[in-house]
Length: 352
Length: 115
Image (cartoon, rainbow over all chains, first blue to last red):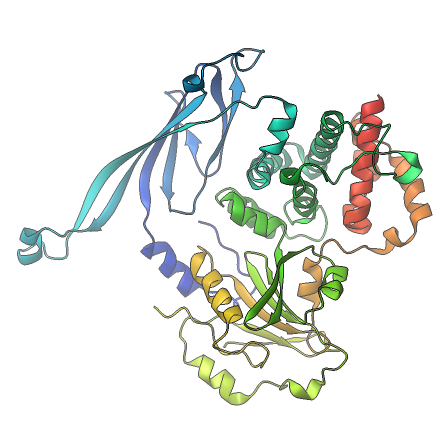
């Protein structure tokens, strides 16, 4: 597990180390996929590596409940799935995961004898089978898409491409992917170059996927991915890019979506959630009519209190009361809170 | 282990409230503890919060005519791929903002459909 803290003062290493050692961990994992004859596993993504001798066998050194690996599949035949299949012959994927766990011994003999406090090592095997339906057409395929899963696979592919061919090529590949998706969407929904939203120069295609709800999140996720440190060529420290690439390789799609496109929700008050998701723009803050916002960017969570014209600065205590800082100092694993004063570029760090 | 947050030196987020409960849930549920920042608009340095508002339009988006000229000069990404100086001609996503980014994608998709 790779972790990069912005500063030493903001490092939450004691808590993070405690979480890593206290969470359930699967060691020496081996993962094997079996599929229906029409498809074969093509590539694996995430913190796993292929076995050199056996096909479709992957090794995971250690993983926890939140760690994720991804696979994509190739068709064996050019035609894809055969048409006219029976309902019980839907394509299926079976995953067998074998791993070792270590846990405290609970047998009475060990508890009373010399082996009190001993640990037991156990090899376990989990088998999971998933059967999926084949989409009836292009429209059904687009409408059954999972944008977060798409983002996860895209991120894996783009990170690999950036390491192999460079950042510029990876950015182009990602933009091309979205352009091609928009073009296919326009074909399926009858919004080709002759109809749709008028744009610059009279050209028309609906790139916001307004008629396909599952795809509506995709442009924002792609745009966010282009803006992350993963794909920014300038003003990004290589350590930050490496850390994000490592993090993206193990995060679940829902968490990765937070990294790429943070979740901004507005609160009418400390107890009243007003709206669960806003677009990440200043205009959204203004039009929400709220003054309290929670922005969840996975690695950073910001509580933002927008000053309204009627709010006086005197209502909020500044500088922070001493007793609040002293009270927080008694917490051994608390995080640092940055307190900044308007008009000053310097940020006073306090170990809360 | 007590995962509760330290008391912030601010009064817009008291100890016993749903927002605080949500913050604690976020901190407890993640493999990596997130940094928690409290920012008051107009009083604190909100640069880190502003940096997260990635859809905001930047300077180039304020000049549609200039934007249009640059878009025409750039061409589609599929065309650019075959050219040698790719890095010089890629549109700056950060400078365009999300709405302009959508316009670029829509325009290039139209070009793709016509070709």
